[in-house]
Length: 75
Image (cartoon, rainbow, N blue to C red; front, side):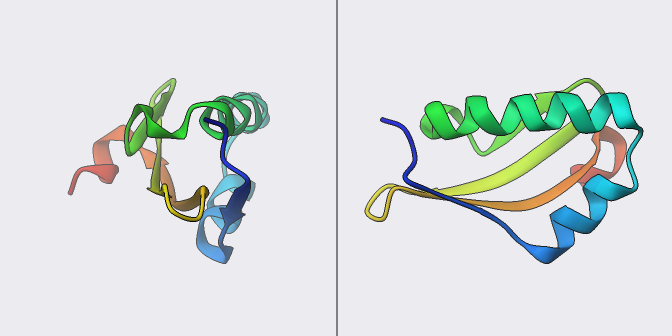
C-alpha cells in the first residue's frame, strides 16, 4: 500500500543539503521506494547513510525523522 502523504521535515531537508550530490540523487530514489512500500521498516539503507522514518498506517503517512551516516544514526 503506497503512502498518500510523505512528510520531509526541516531537519532531514537540511541534512540532505550537506550530503554529496551522488548520495542526494540516491536518496531521492530511496524516497520513491519508501513511498511505494513504507511498511518495509523504519530504516532504509542508502549506501553508508540511513533514512529513519515513521509510518502511520491509519493516515497512510510517512514522516522522515533523520538522514545520517550509518556510524551516527544508531547512537
